[in-house]
Image 1: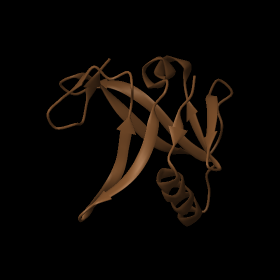
Image 2: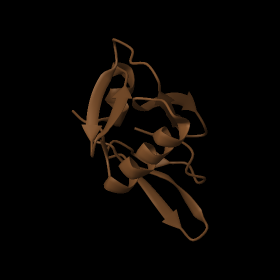
Image 3: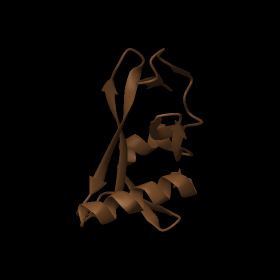
Image 4: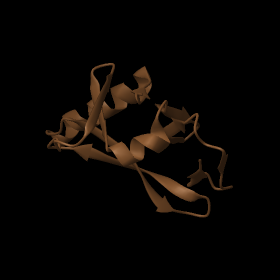
Length: 107
């Protein structure tokens, strides 16, 4: 079981944590939302919760809860720039379909 970051995503998270001046990593989770049922939830972590599962890629720690891991196992988080747009892209092998706007998914 794992969640990984590409080098590009890890660099982006490291730069942002340095700019914030605090933080130990990134939390990735899921929440019920959108037209397809689930949406990704990202936030920076300042303190580790004892129940968190921890993964590390390229020197960046990724935290998640056990419930979310059931939907996220095998996910690779990438950071991409396309023209003037940039953002995280989730390469999740568990996704069966996504909504048209790309904001939610179903497993």
